[in-house]
Length: 316
Length: 118
Image (cartoon, rainbow over all chains, first blue to last red; front, side, top):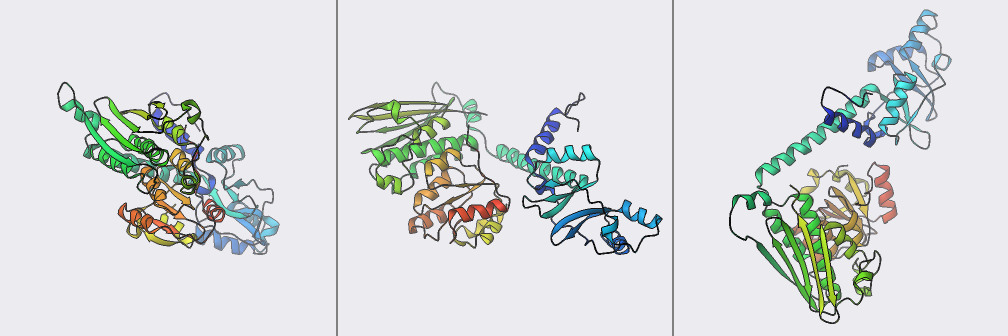
């Protein structure tokens, strides 16, 4: 397979290259196959190949692959006047196989190495699960390309429908423009936790913030909200939407974090049992927030409280 | 993998979001009882398998753009969780299988997990 072309279309080549590392043999293999038993005759094989428009097929005995038989073997049998011989006598028993979970790139390498036209596909228990030809590879790649093309198309359509946040700020003019969303979060109860993050996400979606950024903001805000609800006397989530991006703050009224650095270590948690029982308190909250936000700043004093600031930049 | 196929092979009972099942095709699965793990790693076009029965499982799925939630071990989700799933148009279903078994069956049927977000 040629990976580099001098005359253009490097993107499409890269995409196909990428796909042969993503797809497995099992994914491109046709869902059904025709097999023969070794006791059947070459005459029966002729009918079977003709009726199914095949040029070869695997030979199976007691669920196990025992050989491959092709139209070439049939022609040889005809020449030798051995059309009533059993398939067992004429089949090839030295067979190159592929595993269903092997990547397509290995499969393609095998095609060029051995030059056979079809390979039986086995699962890891060595049972025959299908057969793969060059045709199935092409079909599999085309199908995947089509799916990705459709997804890209619908993304473009969505982008056309909704003006982006960045576009909005370019179109209007003032010395300073910002939108503020404020949510009150109750402390010491997870009952309503997540509502603010969910509502903020919804509001930002309506304003045209793109889905990947929306998701990052949603996750980070949700974690911040869970912290307010789990550890504090209650507080406020405040989001400010501006020309350059979005700031999300979580501000509480105590009791504060004694060791801010330690609190940001993965797995460190002071969560009480009631928080853990609800599926939180794994010590990953601040770690997740840091991962999602472009900038994060955590200030805390005991017993006054904690002020968390996260910034997110528009990507498109 | 089609969500309807997942529901069939897990012998699952649908509690919310019936009308949206036919249009959903997921490509990844994430299984956890710790919601922060889900938030940190899950995949946008995926399904969540969990033992958590409170509304936070639904909130987490909603925030992380997860397409559907499956509760394992035959646990009955809390009424608030079911109501929230209905409000968010999020398919929620339960299976009697354990987490390991449910995941194993989905893996065998071609569904794959999620790599850690970098």
